[in-house]
Length: 356
Image (cartoon, rainbow, N blue to C red; front, side):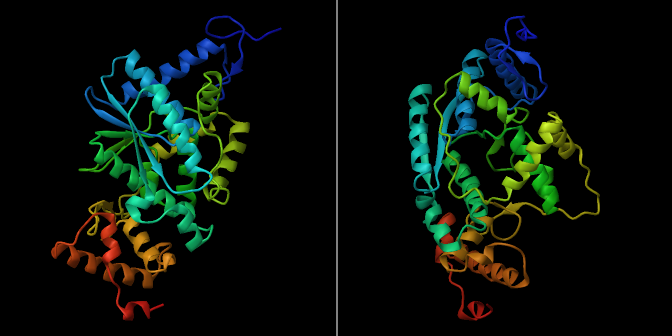
């Protein structure tokens, strides 16, 4: 006997991964869209008249995000100005193909599109970085550069906020990763639906409570145009282990994903625990927890042929950072400050090089 939809009584075609409720296609669309609208309104993510940059990669999450933001903005009259913002990391055979999908999305949703590349921002592509550092830690470099690139792109477009397609699975994975790494500072931020320091463009995650499987089903049933190939450099990523662990938990208990997010939200930090104080990079002005932001540190290591200096923590690295920060400060005083690429002009003495 066919299973009936719990909403309308028609024949169901799926069971929701998060609660196992049977739904027909139309009711699934309705519930899926309304839950995201409820997340947006309950958390007051946007204000009428704001310009919102949609982080667009061409993948399922960002494609569904662009579709949903356009749909809800029109349906509920949010009054938002939406733009697509894509980052070209310079990964041959992957990003060049996915950007073609983004360009089609631009036409399909009638939204303006801005594409920024690592090459123009940093003078490096991910292909060149991987050639320099190998497959280990490449996702760390890419993640740091991508986050800053999105902020810089949104600033160029004079956007008020950035929305990203991070879903419930992504956030739960990040909670697990930060617990395993003992990263209390990031653990406190990763579950926030909206993040942003003073003077910085805030980021919002409308899919915070949306399961990845439901995003896939929505994209499939709606026949949305999206790119499915996995990044060629990601199979060895640390996140993959957290993802495998989470999927095993989900098989046993579907609500595990939301429960992990709730645990991350409710986790208390002892008062005596010292938390990093966020400030601005002395070199490029971007948000940082030390004298230099992570992107400038990584660029400095790459440009000197010593990328390993920007990964991990050790006394030699601290000395390098201190000396590099002092030179960045001096360059700023002399009027040489010129965005992230200003770090290219920072020279390091032979004495520092001899420390290694």
